[in-house]
Image (cartoon, rainbow, N blue to C red):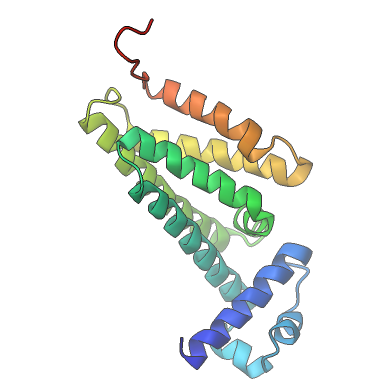
Amino acid sequence: MRDKELTRERILDAAEKLFAEKGFHETAMDEIVHAAKISKGGVYFHFPSKEKLFFALLDKLADALQYEVQEEIARRRGAVNKIQGALGVVLKSLASKRRLAQILLRQGYGLGPAFERKRLEIYSRFAQLIKEHLDEAIAEGSIPPINTEITAYVWLGAINELVLRWIYTGKPDPLTEALPTLLEIFLRGIGYKKKTKKGAP
């Protein structure tokens, strides 16, 4: 990794920690400069404003989460099985990295239309992933035809709401409570019927 890329990563790592601990609005750029151990000019060279730094961090975190999801999908066979794996990875990642969940889902409110555009951009990336595998499930006959785009956004909305509630209250636990219930509701909602072995009731 080149020096510029290393410097950029140091700034993003420092910002991630401070935004999660103090919040976007309460964190000053000078604090990020101090935590990254980089000159103020160096920080502003990479990120001309705190908002641009925040949005770059959102992209980095979303990229990492998307990579984890795609890695899990690649290990599985069958569209519905891939969807189940992807949902599990998202909730496991957010549960094990509460800082990640706070930044992706909580910190940007108050930034106005710019944050809403960025949030929709990130949501669109994950919605497209869900849609692709719902379309695949329809094509392979695992589920009946449905509007996969609307379904994808409904699923993301439900995940967002439950994770936000967990961030604020500590409940429901994303893995032991939320995941099994979400899977049951989601799969039933798209008309998926688990195949039983021959001879089973």
